[in-house]
Every structure is written in structure tokens, then in C-alpha cells.
Amino acid sequence: MIKVVILGSGNVGTHLFKVFKNNSQINITQWYSRNIKDINQYSKSVKTTDKIKDLDDADLYILAVNDDSIHELSALLPFKNRLVCHTSGSKSINELNKNNRAAVFYPLQTFSKDNELDFTKIPLCLETENSEDMITLKSIVKNLGCKYYEIDSNQREKLHLAAVFVNNFTNHMFTIAKTITDDSSIDFNILKPLISETVNKIYKLDPIDAQTGPAVRGDDKTINKHIQDLKSKEHRELYRLVTSLINNLDNEKL
Image (tube, rainbow, N blue to C red; front, top):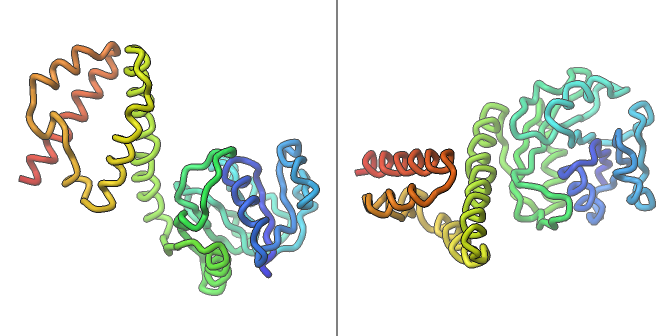
């Protein structure tokens, strides 16, 4: 059984706790948080602490904290030569203090505390400094039933950039769409089948081949009407920019 200590009580740390707790091959020996009240509700099922000096022995210490805290927290760990990983998509393995053996355990997914996820469908990006520690991470992944990729820090940085486009930016487009439907007293839910089909298409087609709409068709009349209908100057500029980018991609393809 692999002994794990989780450090951090945010979205990722909470989800890792939940999935590890239900796995018979992973033993969460302790959960650390500076905001102990955030994890007190779990204190009956796991040992909790807000004191870094009181961390228990473990095979792996997972720093599920915000990016800016990784280096500082890893430097405070009161031991040496143990396996310590962070869960960041954008930070290098070198963010971790050199007193311990560094690794990365990055789940490529968007996390919200109250939104349950099937971890078997979440790809995990792994990086270690030596092959023995990679075996430990792969054992955890195998027990979770996840797919994994060995991805170095440079690749992971680019992957995180791509993830911002497909997740964060796309979600902001949904937000803009909802302002448009709300302003016209239209139920936003009417768009959800279209959203689902848009995503489902890319499982069968390259994204560039799945592109449709007035920009691809060169429908200037519709494009100009859409721009006129947008109330926000920023949204009008965004519409023009994205339309231009789609036109350029289509021209390059041709």
C-alpha cells in the first residue's frame, strides 16, 4: 500500500483526497492545510494538521497548492530525500526545493469542489527526476485506473496553454453567450445540445475540419448583423478577431 500525505485543501487537493480515500491500495496518512477549518470536516476519516513540522512519514507528498506557493512550501518541509510532487500544469519540476526528490503529478482537468468527477477519465501527466520514482507514480495511476503520459516541464507548459484555450477561454465564450440569451429572455439551456455536439465532433474530426458558421461560409451579411447586435465594444472586437482568425485558418488550409 502506498502511503500519501496531501498538502493543500483547494479544489485539486479535495478531489485527490476523495479519490484516494476510496482506493484500497492508497493510504492517506495525513492531510495538511494552513486553513485547518477547510478540512476539519474530514478529520474523522484522516489525520489532519496545520503544522508543517508535524508531517508524518509517507511514500509521497503531494503539494496541491496554488502555483505561487509551491517553492515556498516545498522549502519548509522538515525532511530530506523524500518524494515530493506538485500538481501544477504551468510550473516546472524545478519549482520544488532540492532537499527532496522532485516530481509532478498533474491531472489535466478542471476542478470544482462540489462537482464530482470520474478520475478514470482524467489523464495524468507525470514527471520525475529518476525512474524509481516514476514507478511509484505509475503505481498510483494504475490503482486509480487512469491513463497517464510522461510529459516534461516544457511540454506540460505548452499543454497548459492549450488547456486554457479549450477550457477557460471556451467557458468565457459560454458566459458571453449567456449574456446574449439573458438579454433576450431566452433560456440558455437551449444552447446546450449545440455545445455538446460541438465538443463531440472533435472526437471524430480534426478541429479545423469541424469548423462551421458564417466566417467559414464568408457570410458577410450575417457577420455584420451579429456585430451590430452586440452591445459591448469588447465583444464586437472579439467577434471580429475570432472571425478573422477563422478566415485565415481556412485560407491557409485551402
